[in-house]
Length: 321
Image 1 (tube, helix red, strand yellow):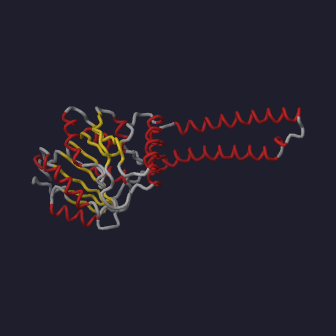
Image 2 (cartoon, rainbow, N blue to C red):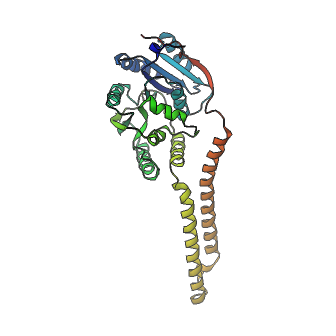
Image 3 (cartoon, rainbow, N blue to C red):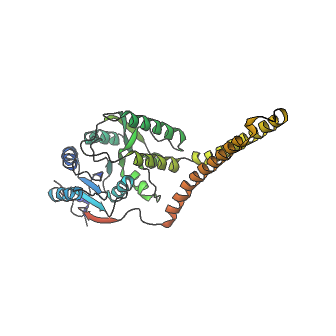
């Protein structure tokens, strides 16, 4: 059992997935920041089922530096779940989340802490520019954040990721939330408290391959929309009303042409087929939307744990360096 003097003031959470090429440089830069702070720091590395040498390197860092704690999930559960696992174990009064690819500069953390000392419970990093990213990635990210801001039930700041600082009071509220399909930056906004932004230009990935592929990014975007907006459900109603209006209009037009131009080709098989395909597509879209919401209800009621741990290290041996 740790004594009160061993309780860290700061907790840094970094999810790791196949980051063997970045871990050494990541630790080098983060440890420089840790040495500048005014209290004990724990660095929580969450191995999210990596298939490379990431876990081996994490163990070596823990042996070298007792401030390094680690969690190794039993399999790959996804980025948001890995962050959640770190939040569950964080003990610091101040908790910082950042990514392992060094696109989130650790050197920004002291500025975040200054904002926390001014009374802000949440300090999130807001991107001004994405360096060395393709036009398609920049365009889709820009479009998604504006769409989410417009459709979501809460005000989720645009161009923000999981890179943030949170007071432990906020972390306690996050940890008490039971939902499984987690979108951390959305939950962070929903909680409230005093929040502010720090602007920065996002660096390119230090090394290795991008982990958030288009498929994963699209899945995260869909998850955020479903989790924080009821507009997709309303869309089903709107599409139903639209199809009913189109069907009524077509019926009136067909009746008109039958009375005034019986030989019109518009009243033939093609018109019927178009109407069938239109109504069928509307029904399938509505079923798909309902399926997304019902699937989430199904995941929630099963009651399975959010993640399983394969290995835990360092949480009972924290000493001051």
